[in-house]
Length: 517
Image 1: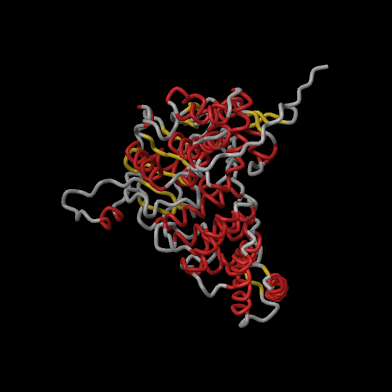
Image 2: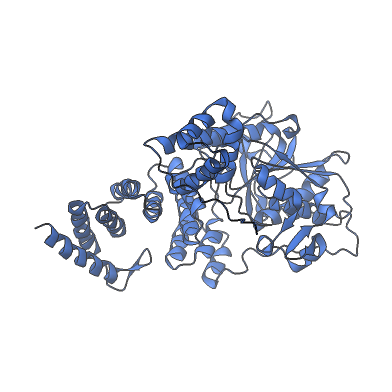
């Protein structure tokens, strides 16, 4: 009998500076910046590659730093990338594409030219296949004009899964029964994408940090969702500028709904289309127009998206669909929002400040999904963007999506280094990962920015105590008690009862006072 158990991975201990060196190598190669909360991910990937190559850690680190080790650096990057995704992951974007953008583009673009869509960072293929289904829903089957969907990713492993077109039930969470029947075939415990969908998508391996091939030029639509949040700010700026140059005038850029170009790129213009925010590449100002940002922003795109898109109505959808193929309605992304959030979503005049306040209240009440839906209403192109992104990071943390939470909290700080909520959240996430010295740094920064916060002082006291810094811990527990004095015992602070916080602080003040004698 053969033993198919995997070889046991070695326990790795990195030398001082070794994590940073390998992290920076990966960031320069792939753009993905591994925060210290993902040090375990890197250690696991390193252990797997050491077993595969038979090298020591020091020899391996030197090898991947050499140009000859580039192929192995790719293998290491493969082991650290997160490929978790779903079909129709961002339903509002898909609805805007189906109801407004594709019909409008089809009407305006010459009939002999294809509609060209790029899924950049396509992972295991759910996004480009979703785009293909939307194209078939919008333009009919067979298509009344050519559609080209180019799907790229750094990971060859992810692309191999994408090309297979096989998916398990979890990936189809947002796919309606009617869509499953039309576009999938059941094969055992998996679902297989049908041929009409597969033929629209071409997959290719591409590192977004390297020069784009010629076929990237003249794109009508680019989807790049939840990719740039893992990039550092300078890397993100460079990539967005290259996307801008690759697009035709009037082209549309779809980012993840908590990603923003505020303070990153000023060439794109933000528009609300069918309840979803997208970026488009405007026409240049006419020679007799003032060359100001306001003039460019007000100029309509070649796709005819007006400045006030709330007045935009979807064109008639008799675009070649046969009468025997009724349109399929996309799932409603907001159908599970509770009544308090539902009322807010109906208020078109809700200000950014009100959205932030209500989003904070929903998070405090443990309603992270509803908070995300509400926060998505705030356009991320103004002074409130860092606060919105920080609250979205907290919502993702509450939902257990730690990688995304860390990435978005870091993005909030990049947008505004004074975003207290982001420092506090990072402190908590680092503490959960056992990175206590780094947690203390973030809690201390948050306390400096918001010295009156009892909950920040409490978390800082806990981190000090776990690091055996008993004097600072005692001082911070006493500070927390002073800050809690105005609050009645039954009030919740960040979801924690004030009475529990008081009792916990008093207990440790007593213990640490005795230990200090």
